[in-house]
Image 1: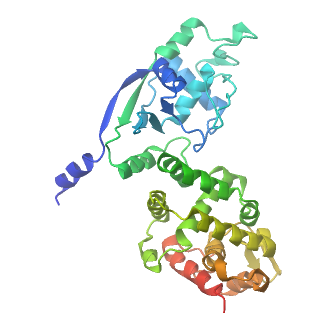
Image 2: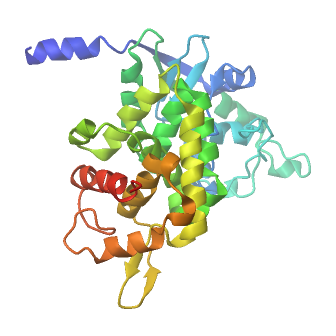
Image 3: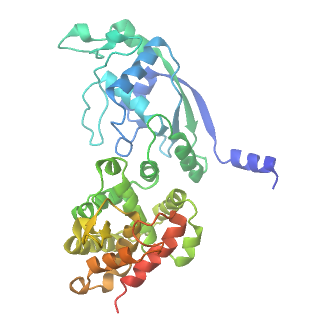
Length: 368
């Protein structure tokens, strides 16, 4: 196939339309529930008050706002693909923004900016102190400002929509890879997203992985849940296809999300049994490095240890006896195994490491 043929073929998988809409029209779409900004899966409060104020400054000064990308669903509602932070800032300013539970978010109080220092303390409509309200003329400037929209039409190729979503979510406050996956998952299988989110909140799992606040903010906990689901029973022949781990996880997630008879109950049982066992045996030491010289575990979470221990137990969970399993000794032995690419903490890229760690875990925790 020639380059031009490849271009023509790829251009045909996404059909789009586009035009400019006033902010007043965007507000109407949101109020009429014709626009879904998905606050439950993006970094809803990622922008600081300063960043939000700068956006409003740009609108008031007539500085063009980057276009919004939406995907048209079967029911006609627009899913926001790129532009949540811009739209949520505007909706919060006018006092109509709601959180993921449908509760009103407190209206935005602006801060001073470089060119408009008098924005300090201003609100859209401050009933307690009208002097702090934007004037009618200023509100009309906001409502009449136009923002371009690019609409990914519903007849577009499904996988191409997700590829576009991943490419668009970059910029000053980019989403992590897992946040992008969460966003995609909500669009195609909300039930699975909510199920995975619930697993990430399992108290035993939370204690065992002992992640930092930053990792939790970027939803690395859900990344680990996805890894458990993807790799727990993955056919060994698939390991050679990993390549880039992020892309591999996304592709596998899409495959799983589209399954009509995904075994939720079985996977949940494997997950909860695994982390119940680990909580009782090694707790927050489950995925840390063991220092033989000091005779103790230390440091932070090691994904290589997770791949061996959690996935090894998860693979064999139905035949394991909690009383006869010495997880702590297994981890200590792994840490002493110098030169092994499956050793916890080994600095080896995922495509090379995982084909070693996951099968090793399956073997180590296989009952005699």
